[in-house]
Length: 229
Image (tube, rainbow, N blue to C red):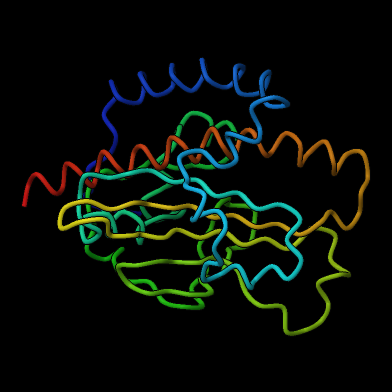
Protein backbone atom coordinates (compact mmCIF):
# COMPACT_ATOMS: atom_id res chain seq x y z
CA UNK A 1 0.00 0.00 0.00
CA UNK A 2 1.38 3.42 -1.01
CA UNK A 3 0.76 6.25 1.43
CA UNK A 4 1.07 10.03 0.92
CA UNK A 5 1.00 9.69 -2.87
CA UNK A 6 -0.97 11.77 -5.29
CA UNK A 7 -3.25 9.77 -7.59
CA UNK A 8 -4.96 10.57 -10.86
CA UNK A 9 -7.84 13.02 -10.45
CA UNK A 10 -11.39 11.88 -11.11
CA UNK A 11 -11.66 14.32 -14.01
CA UNK A 12 -8.52 12.99 -15.65
CA UNK A 13 -9.67 9.41 -15.06
CA UNK A 14 -12.96 10.15 -16.83
CA UNK A 15 -11.34 12.00 -19.73
CA UNK A 16 -8.70 9.33 -20.31
CA UNK A 17 -11.30 6.58 -20.06
CA UNK A 18 -13.37 8.32 -22.73
CA UNK A 19 -10.27 8.64 -24.89
CA UNK A 20 -9.42 4.97 -24.47
CA UNK A 21 -12.95 3.83 -25.25
CA UNK A 22 -12.86 5.89 -28.43
CA UNK A 23 -9.44 4.66 -29.52
CA UNK A 24 -9.92 0.97 -28.74
CA UNK A 25 -12.35 0.08 -31.57
CA UNK A 26 -10.46 2.33 -33.99
CA UNK A 27 -7.14 0.59 -33.25
CA UNK A 28 -8.68 -2.90 -33.43
CA UNK A 29 -10.49 -2.22 -36.72
CA UNK A 30 -7.54 -0.58 -38.47
CA UNK A 31 -4.79 -2.82 -37.05
CA UNK A 32 -4.34 -4.97 -40.19
CA UNK A 33 -3.51 -1.78 -42.10
CA UNK A 34 -2.00 0.44 -39.39
CA UNK A 35 0.07 -2.25 -37.66
CA UNK A 36 3.38 -1.40 -39.36
CA UNK A 37 3.10 2.25 -38.34
CA UNK A 38 1.77 1.69 -34.83
CA UNK A 39 4.47 -0.86 -34.00
CA UNK A 40 7.07 1.84 -34.59
CA UNK A 41 4.94 4.74 -33.29
CA UNK A 42 7.11 7.79 -32.56
CA UNK A 43 10.41 5.98 -33.08
CA UNK A 44 13.14 6.92 -35.55
CA UNK A 45 14.80 4.63 -38.11
CA UNK A 46 18.09 4.57 -36.20
CA UNK A 47 16.29 3.67 -32.96
CA UNK A 48 14.55 0.76 -34.64
CA UNK A 49 17.69 -0.49 -36.39
CA UNK A 50 20.16 -0.40 -33.50
CA UNK A 51 20.73 -3.04 -30.85
CA UNK A 52 19.65 -2.08 -27.34
CA UNK A 53 20.56 -3.41 -23.91
CA UNK A 54 18.09 -6.18 -23.14
CA UNK A 55 17.64 -7.34 -26.74
CA UNK A 56 19.88 -10.28 -25.89
CA UNK A 57 17.21 -11.67 -23.55
CA UNK A 58 15.36 -12.90 -26.66
CA UNK A 59 17.71 -15.02 -28.75
CA UNK A 60 15.43 -15.41 -31.78
CA UNK A 61 13.17 -12.38 -31.93
CA UNK A 62 10.27 -12.98 -34.27
CA UNK A 63 8.66 -9.66 -33.45
CA UNK A 64 10.26 -6.38 -32.35
CA UNK A 65 8.32 -3.26 -31.39
CA UNK A 66 9.99 0.14 -30.84
CA UNK A 67 7.94 3.14 -29.71
CA UNK A 68 9.14 6.52 -28.49
CA UNK A 69 8.17 10.03 -27.50
CA UNK A 70 9.95 13.39 -27.21
CA UNK A 71 9.83 14.95 -23.75
CA UNK A 72 10.55 18.61 -22.98
CA UNK A 73 12.33 17.67 -19.77
CA UNK A 74 15.75 16.39 -18.82
CA UNK A 75 16.27 12.67 -18.31
CA UNK A 76 16.62 13.30 -14.58
CA UNK A 77 12.97 14.41 -14.54
CA UNK A 78 11.86 11.32 -16.51
CA UNK A 79 13.68 8.62 -14.56
CA UNK A 80 11.73 8.94 -11.27
CA UNK A 81 8.55 7.92 -13.11
CA UNK A 82 10.20 5.08 -15.02
CA UNK A 83 11.74 3.50 -11.94
CA UNK A 84 8.38 3.51 -10.08
CA UNK A 85 6.63 1.39 -12.74
CA UNK A 86 4.75 -1.73 -11.67
CA UNK A 87 1.81 -3.20 -9.79
CA UNK A 88 2.00 -2.35 -6.09
CA UNK A 89 4.32 0.50 -7.04
CA UNK A 90 3.24 3.57 -9.07
CA UNK A 91 1.13 1.62 -11.54
CA UNK A 92 1.39 1.62 -15.32
CA UNK A 93 0.51 5.23 -16.21
CA UNK A 94 -2.12 4.01 -18.68
CA UNK A 95 -5.90 3.56 -18.88
CA UNK A 96 -6.89 2.53 -15.36
CA UNK A 97 -10.35 1.31 -16.36
CA UNK A 98 -8.95 -1.17 -18.88
CA UNK A 99 -6.40 -2.39 -16.35
CA UNK A 100 -9.09 -2.96 -13.74
CA UNK A 101 -11.31 -4.76 -16.26
CA UNK A 102 -8.34 -7.09 -16.83
CA UNK A 103 -8.31 -7.89 -13.11
CA UNK A 104 -5.43 -5.58 -12.21
CA UNK A 105 -6.26 -3.58 -9.06
CA UNK A 106 -4.08 -0.63 -10.00
CA UNK A 107 -4.32 3.01 -9.01
CA UNK A 108 -1.75 5.05 -10.87
CA UNK A 109 0.44 7.35 -8.81
CA UNK A 110 1.09 10.89 -10.02
CA UNK A 111 3.80 11.89 -7.58
CA UNK A 112 7.37 10.79 -7.01
CA UNK A 113 7.41 8.42 -4.03
CA UNK A 114 10.79 8.21 -2.32
CA UNK A 115 10.48 4.55 -1.26
CA UNK A 116 9.75 3.52 -4.86
CA UNK A 117 12.93 5.07 -6.25
CA UNK A 118 14.98 2.00 -5.37
CA UNK A 119 15.22 -0.80 -7.93
CA UNK A 120 17.85 -3.49 -8.46
CA UNK A 121 18.68 -6.20 -10.97
CA UNK A 122 16.79 -9.33 -9.95
CA UNK A 123 13.82 -7.49 -8.48
CA UNK A 124 10.52 -8.87 -9.79
CA UNK A 125 7.99 -6.36 -11.09
CA UNK A 126 4.41 -7.60 -11.16
CA UNK A 127 2.03 -6.83 -14.02
CA UNK A 128 -0.94 -8.85 -12.78
CA UNK A 129 -1.84 -10.20 -9.32
CA UNK A 130 -2.20 -13.74 -10.70
CA UNK A 131 0.99 -13.75 -12.74
CA UNK A 132 4.59 -14.11 -11.56
CA UNK A 133 6.70 -10.99 -11.60
CA UNK A 134 9.07 -10.22 -14.44
CA UNK A 135 12.70 -9.80 -13.38
CA UNK A 136 14.74 -6.67 -13.83
CA UNK A 137 17.50 -8.03 -16.05
CA UNK A 138 19.51 -4.85 -16.64
CA UNK A 139 19.48 -1.51 -14.92
CA UNK A 140 21.41 1.72 -15.36
CA UNK A 141 19.94 4.43 -13.13
CA UNK A 142 18.84 7.42 -15.13
CA UNK A 143 19.30 5.61 -18.42
CA UNK A 144 17.41 2.34 -18.78
CA UNK A 145 15.62 -0.55 -17.14
CA UNK A 146 15.21 -3.86 -19.00
CA UNK A 147 12.79 -6.58 -17.95
CA UNK A 148 13.68 -10.14 -18.85
CA UNK A 149 16.57 -12.53 -18.37
CA UNK A 150 18.97 -14.69 -20.32
CA UNK A 151 17.90 -18.32 -20.51
CA UNK A 152 20.89 -20.19 -19.11
CA UNK A 153 18.95 -23.39 -18.44
CA UNK A 154 18.42 -24.29 -22.08
CA UNK A 155 14.80 -25.13 -21.29
CA UNK A 156 13.12 -22.17 -23.00
CA UNK A 157 11.97 -24.21 -25.98
CA UNK A 158 9.99 -26.52 -23.69
CA UNK A 159 7.95 -23.66 -22.25
CA UNK A 160 4.53 -23.01 -23.80
CA UNK A 161 4.84 -19.22 -24.03
CA UNK A 162 7.45 -17.47 -26.18
CA UNK A 163 10.24 -15.61 -24.42
CA UNK A 164 9.88 -11.85 -24.18
CA UNK A 165 11.78 -8.76 -23.15
CA UNK A 166 10.48 -5.27 -22.52
CA UNK A 167 12.61 -2.23 -21.82
CA UNK A 168 12.50 1.52 -21.26
CA UNK A 169 15.35 3.84 -22.26
CA UNK A 170 15.92 7.54 -21.62
CA UNK A 171 17.98 9.34 -24.26
CA UNK A 172 19.11 12.92 -23.49
CA UNK A 173 18.65 15.23 -26.48
CA UNK A 174 19.56 18.51 -24.77
CA UNK A 175 19.97 20.17 -21.36
CA UNK A 176 16.21 20.12 -20.83
CA UNK A 177 14.94 17.59 -23.35
CA UNK A 178 15.01 13.83 -23.83
CA UNK A 179 13.38 10.89 -25.53
CA UNK A 180 11.72 7.93 -23.87
CA UNK A 181 11.96 4.75 -25.92
CA UNK A 182 10.05 1.50 -25.33
CA UNK A 183 11.38 -1.70 -26.85
CA UNK A 184 9.65 -5.06 -26.86
CA UNK A 185 11.00 -8.31 -28.33
CA UNK A 186 9.19 -11.63 -28.57
CA UNK A 187 10.18 -15.07 -29.78
CA UNK A 188 8.19 -17.11 -32.33
CA UNK A 189 5.09 -18.89 -31.03
CA UNK A 190 6.14 -22.32 -29.76
CA UNK A 191 2.71 -23.90 -29.73
CA UNK A 192 0.96 -22.39 -32.77
CA UNK A 193 -2.56 -23.33 -31.77
CA UNK A 194 -5.44 -21.23 -33.05
CA UNK A 195 -6.16 -19.98 -29.54
CA UNK A 196 -2.57 -18.92 -28.96
CA UNK A 197 -2.37 -17.15 -32.31
CA UNK A 198 -5.63 -15.31 -31.74
CA UNK A 199 -4.46 -14.27 -28.29
CA UNK A 200 -1.25 -12.80 -29.68
CA UNK A 201 -3.13 -11.06 -32.50
CA UNK A 202 -5.39 -9.37 -29.96
CA UNK A 203 -2.53 -8.56 -27.57
CA UNK A 204 -0.61 -6.51 -30.15
CA UNK A 205 -3.11 -3.66 -30.72
CA UNK A 206 -3.97 -3.53 -27.03
CA UNK A 207 -0.26 -3.27 -26.18
CA UNK A 208 -0.04 -0.26 -28.49
CA UNK A 209 -3.09 1.36 -26.97
CA UNK A 210 -1.78 1.02 -23.42
CA UNK A 211 1.83 1.92 -24.25
CA UNK A 212 1.05 5.12 -26.13
CA UNK A 213 -1.01 6.33 -23.16
CA UNK A 214 1.81 5.36 -20.80
CA UNK A 215 4.37 7.31 -22.85
CA UNK A 216 2.13 10.37 -22.98
CA UNK A 217 1.41 10.22 -19.25
CA UNK A 218 5.10 9.97 -18.34
CA UNK A 219 5.78 12.92 -20.64
CA UNK A 220 3.13 15.01 -18.87
CA UNK A 221 4.42 14.09 -15.42
CA UNK A 222 8.06 14.70 -16.33
CA UNK A 223 7.34 18.10 -17.88
CA UNK A 224 5.31 19.06 -14.82
CA UNK A 225 8.13 17.97 -12.52
CA UNK A 226 10.66 19.93 -14.56
CA UNK A 227 8.52 23.04 -14.24
CA UNK A 228 8.51 22.73 -10.46
CA UNK A 229 12.30 22.62 -10.12
